[in-house]
Image (cartoon, rainbow, N blue to C red; front, top):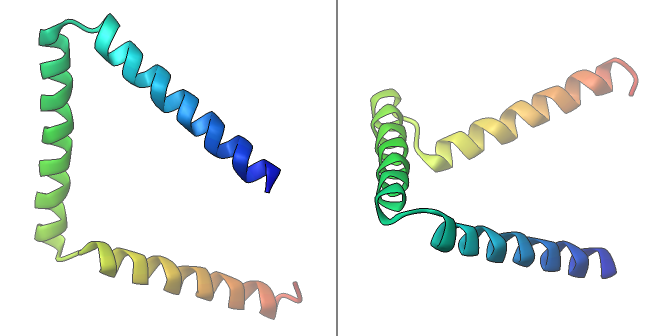
Length: 79
């Protein structure tokens, strides 16, 4: 429980400091450029996902299947 509380507190501190740095250290133009960059990455991800037909649910199912396959391989090796 303490570890979870510390993790949440550390995450909150990092988020708060990141926001403060974003607001105070970046100019308005730099913030707009950063937002445009994030939008570009998100749009590119969406286009690539659409092109290969991979939805977030499909990606998760693929990840779970790969984990299960790896677990079975380790099991066959005696671990």
